[in-house]
Image 1 (cartoon, rainbow over the protein chains, first blue to last red):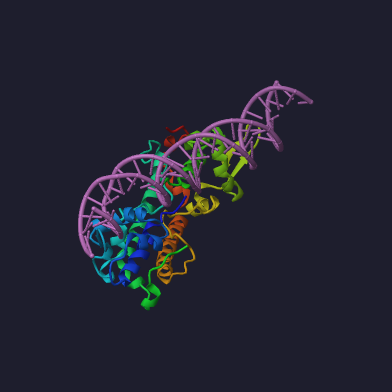
Image 2 (cartoon, rainbow over the protein chains, first blue to last red):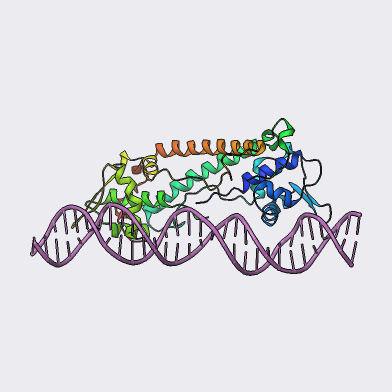
Length: 145
Length: 145
DNA sequence: AGGTATGTAACAGTTGGAGATACATAATCG
DNA sequence: CGATTATGTATCTCCAACTGTTACATACCT
């Protein structure tokens, strides 16, 4: 199963945006993310709706943060992405008739719910400025791979 | 993203095996699991190697537990399955050169490692007899879906 | 008007894993 | 011993979800 890298990708890009002075285009940011502009915009749409970033159209347009890095938590970003599923494991059928299967499902669901709570708690504690490198020289936007 | 249901599936089947008196065939157990015998055997191979179950070939053959339900933890089963990956999220590249990306990766890896520890701890606490229904009448093997 | 950038719908390509098939091996029964 | 029944496993097919790609509309600046 291929992992969903959108959260990681978006955090990466947001930190670059936090270091930039002006607007950065989808083209530049998509390269930094290792994808193409259309995928980038699709991915960032939720963040714009959530008010984490702003985008400007037309000539001279691009993207910028709508809040300071210290005012954005990982949980904000995760939720703006639409709370993508965290786990690669799960139950085959949600509503089993078999009592044995019901019990197994309950254990799995409970455990995953607790783990999800752990993620949410941890994500809420971390603001983006805590992840940013101290030396801004290392934070310049550039393409990867 | 499709979730890996093998852990849930296998727990379900193990509980049925714990209730059964004799051997149960791959055919019967696969139906209970909602799949076919070949997939079932492929899935159970690790559990046999780990010594959690035994299988007998030929006429009258089938599967049985090698230990009592109270002596099998969820962690035992999870490890016997080859420790399938727990998370649907992750980083795009494991070894980034960009310092920003490195920091993001580190946060993700740390958080996931802690969550994985939580899963392992919880799985170690739970033995299969704790999941089994009290009334064995409900535990008879039968096909689902 | 022309150039540049975002917004988004629609289509194509990829891929990982489940399902399916085939056949070898092994054990029991008559 | 041959027939039957069951597991062991390699290999192929199939499918669905998601990424990537393309196309085009919209908007803004010069």
